[in-house]
Length: 75
Image 1 (spheres, rainbow, N blue to C red):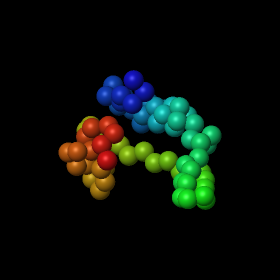
Image 2 (image 1 turned 90 degrees about the vertical axis):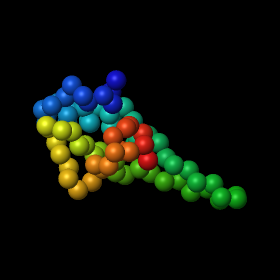
Image 3 (image 1 turned 45 degrees about the vertical axis):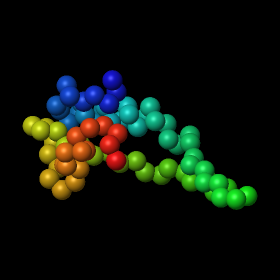
Image 4 (image 1 turned 45 degrees about the horizontal axis):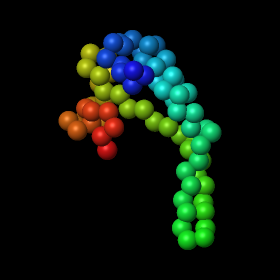
């Protein structure tokens, strides 16, 4: 799976995978549309951030280290 990084340990491999994920999302081709009454506003995604905390590879002591964030898709 594209989101499974358990076998990746080098910075280059992880960077390549994150590039693949962002490419697969192709967000530059999509807009968020908010419709309220008869008004519609479209929003373009300008930035996308990835956060990674992986033991033995990349530890981020400041963000995204809580237990509920150990599972993909948890908000």
